[in-house]
Image (cartoon, rainbow, N blue to C red; front, side):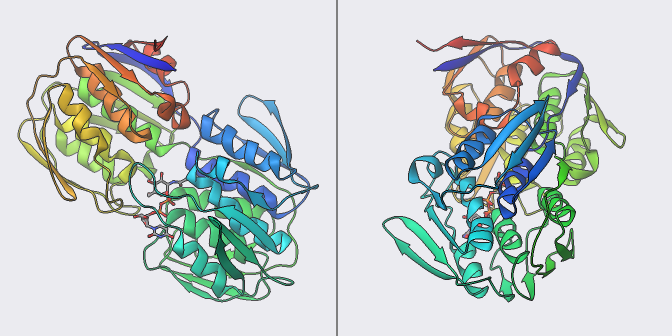
Length: 420
Ligand code: UD1
């Protein structure tokens, strides 16, 4: 297993190219199950999670090939199975995204229940209830969701108790081939869902309400293969903005979409970062002193839970106290104990964390616990004095393309080593 070794205290200067969004690529890859033929996807990040979903699709009979940097072609003409096994789903919860498209196209799907994960219980009851509303028989047997319908799914009204991201995506992919119209209410409107909707529309789907909390899907009889460009990763973008805030410097992020980060940019400006944004770039300058800001994670366009750990790392260096309230996941403070090992003063009280800023961090050995927690440790390590070693970095490989190379390219002293 590899570890990351960081010598802290080096300012960041230069350019970083932002990769395609993992959370947009995953549902779009799953959507290629809806119809046979060669689909072409551009700007696909080279990440472990992407390889996992492609391996899962390969077990179903899907073929794919890389035809250029970030460009893949996928064809699901010869499906041989409708089952996503426990072995694959347990390594990546987003595997559940094959449920909707398999059921819509094949009339059945058998997908392992994902179980809990480091950040919370994360059930999939909304996905199951929604599919039932579209006429599917769904049973849970031996740890698997078994869904079936004779003929096509039928349109229906689905109300989400909470706007689940992958739940919305699964229901969209189920509804596009249903007989009749489906109305999906209180859905999530994360930009990655907009990217999926663009792909589905390019495939011939009829969907109204993009970027709103109510989607109307007029089912069609068949879809066609399509091509799509994956949107830039707003969480990767936010992570590097925050890193510059923590350690200082002057960095331009290219190939990103600043408009997708309204809550973060507002908070970073209040904290004292200089941000300049264009249609597809950000220039960020860290000036040294930082003001504390309070954070409450919310569904889009609120502050993303996937940037909560990183902004917490930044608040360690701010003047004053920051209150961070996590409202999306019930156990998303695993990074706190590790940040404390570096010298941070953070208290957790239920769903809130209180960060007393102004601590001087010193490097230590820490352990990555989940994807975004790992990113917060990298940020803290970049700004700490001395050497920080982060083990279990396979979490980072799931979601950050070339993180070490990108940070080293702007002056960070960071390397990957074998963890003995
Ligand atoms: C997606 C993102 C993840 C992000 C999260 C919230 C992908 C692949 N992952 O995860 O990076 O952190 O959105 O922005 O896009 N819930 C239920 N029942 C369900 C579904 C969800 O109770 O059937 C709860 C969850 O436990 C959680 C909340 O709803 O508390 C939001 O979860 P959800 O939006 O579904 O997250 P994911 O789609 O899994």
